[in-house]
Length: 360
Image 1 (cartoon, rainbow, N blue to C red):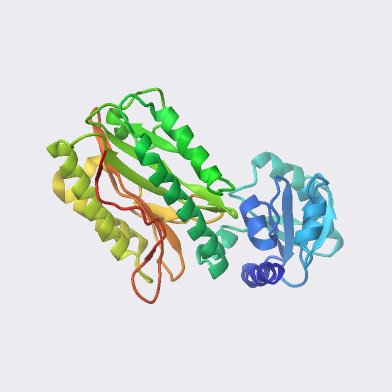
Image 2: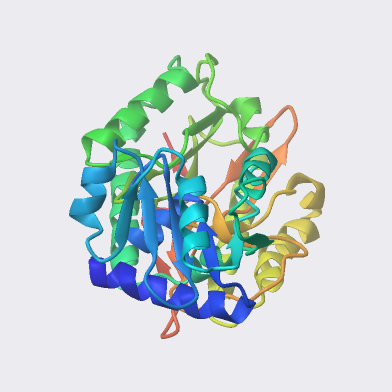
């Protein structure tokens, strides 16, 4: 894996050089992991536009860094940003580009007040942009996370019975993902039943399931640092006509969105493909979040797909497609897949659980 991370750093260095900065200070922990392989709660990388980089972490992770990151210089420091700024100064690096989206104002002030600190300029989302297109190793890790998610969801279905609470089902689902080999949860699971289904990010509570409920379950496993994301909506008992109608509409919109997710497609156009179908059926006001987002070392990462978003999809970019309809006081439906945009043929669907309405 060291060669893989070295290649990623080389790509980043080319982009850093194009900014005119002498070096970049990488402090976003997912970005540090992407460029070095180190999993740490306190680490940063000084990456010059030309020449070797320096990874700083503290004593809790130093031995792991020496073991796993043998192709980069490593320093042991508690105040990693200050240490790297000092190293930059001693090496004659006059301008450091920093990750303004991650660094707090307080931390920036502390760095800028160091007598030896180089000039600080914003880097932008340079590393996040590099992370969008995944290599085969990343896609395999993401596929494994999705497979665990699908397995856990399948085991969950028999537990959806009248009287069980949202919270209890969420706990059992999360335990199942861990038991099946997940390193961690990708995010806190959503279980939203009955009228709670009208709240897109409802927190599971003590409401017991009732016959006639639509139940939306949004969940994901994390494996090797990569995050799965899947949503399915099921019905406890035979659905009413309005429930079947909105389910069929969301399902059709979701399929259209997936089909539109192709290389060179405008992100806003992919969103509009699904959104316009829902709006044409009179539910424009009932679908107000974005159609989807990138997934990888973070569960929400570039590209973000929604109205007004810019950019194009590329080959090997994993994204979610997750339209929904939310009717206040009644309930809702959301269907979401994690998929990989592919140049040769249609998108590769990683969350393979059926999207037919499951009547339990």
